[in-house]
Amino acid sequence: MDLKQVCELLQRNGFLLDEVKGIGYGQQARFTNGTTVNVYDSGKIVVGGKDQEGAKRLLGLSVQPQTAPVSIVRGNNKVFVVYGHDEQARTQLEAMLRRWGMEPLILDQLPSEGQTIIEKLESYTADVQFAVVLATPDDRGHRAEHADESAYRARQNVVLELGMLLSKLGRRRVAILLKQQENMERPSDIQGLIYIPFRDDLAKEAGLLLAKEMAAQGYNLDVARI
Image (cartoon, rainbow, N blue to C red; front, top):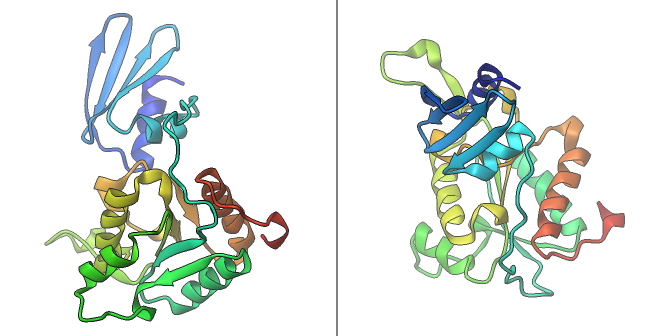
């Protein structure tokens, strides 16, 4: 894979190219999120800077396993769920999680007890080890005076809650199910995450990928139910 192919692949997946410069025996591509990719004349590719894991996954490079122990409480089957206006997709996701023996925590189904939305989210995620964010094409938007760039996007509350969960749980413990991903805009600041396509005709495949991510974080899933 040469430098042009590297840049094209990463840019298709949301990495914004900042500059390309020559280095000893090769070239370096620097992206706006702080990721750098060195492509040497020998064909060797070295990823540095920020979001190395996301870039390496996209480029098919080996990712170093997490060495720190995962502090999962065994037997904890609670999973936090964030969703927008697509109630049918939410119902599918909730049914799938319950079939696996999980307890989905859905914000608008939980008592508020006088708390604000943010306080409520913080309270109910205190003992949750994993979250699933269902991003559906509920809104359309574009830059001011650039109506030709109009694209579907998740609701703003979904993006806000996604950011809070990433900060609290970390990237490995937040799965993003993206409905109609080919038509969806992704916030640039959260590129490099693993997105799982979620469509009616791919429900089983999405379930397998989600189960794999949850099992990697310590959840005991009954494979027969997936």
